[in-house]
Length: 313
Image 1 (tube, rainbow, N blue to C red):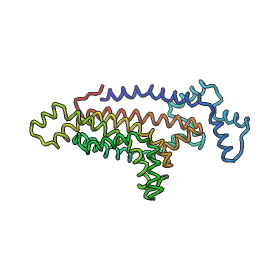
Image 2: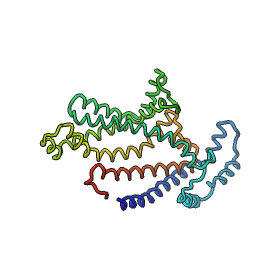
Image 3: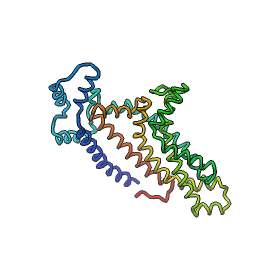
Image 4: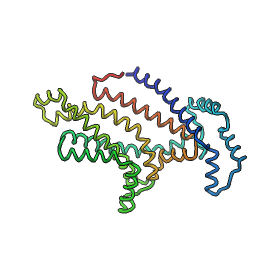
């Protein structure tokens, strides 16, 4: 177990390097830079204009007028010390910016994942147990619909219906448990649909295995056969999907947070991309990659808890 963890940590190092390198090079190859973005924002806000000399001076202050290889070497030398610098927009350390926004994103992601697990796994079990019935067909149909509807469209629809028309729930910004309902439901619908289909397929496969037939032959009740024998084995592939969904949840949060003006990492990273705030983009990408790697490691370790026959590769 310890050897497996150490191996995964060592593999994560080049993975993080590749991700950061792609982000570093990719954003600098896009036309425009942070100085031009600041000039455009100053012009739009009416606070003044910047001459070509001012833009060049700002480039020099930010260090983005140096050769790309020099910038890259400086970036790596600081990244290995977990020093990603200060945000161009706020002039604050980037990890302080992330720390301020992270609780909002964690709250939204946790609520969404909880709803998806609760309803997705339950619906998947019911669809498998009542296979080829009206209930199972309806659940599968709803799952297909949930997968097909984009979350930005669903979020807008829910905001118009429950916020604008019915005035039941707030549609923008944080403000208690009621404000998190619409964005978390928007994210959870797609996750719930995916979990339903995987749980149904995995449990149907487990119910046709020899060990389930043996358990039934022993005279065990159908409830015991499903919950104690079939379900535990069926959860192994579902946990894999759940881990990938939890890690990739941050990507979906980016869209939904902007739909509902939620002040989390999603709105922050979109603003950073618009402003070409390179340090903030790079630090947030590093954080997202670290979360993804950590969640996948936890998924690998959870296999042995669900099925002791599985050994770490």
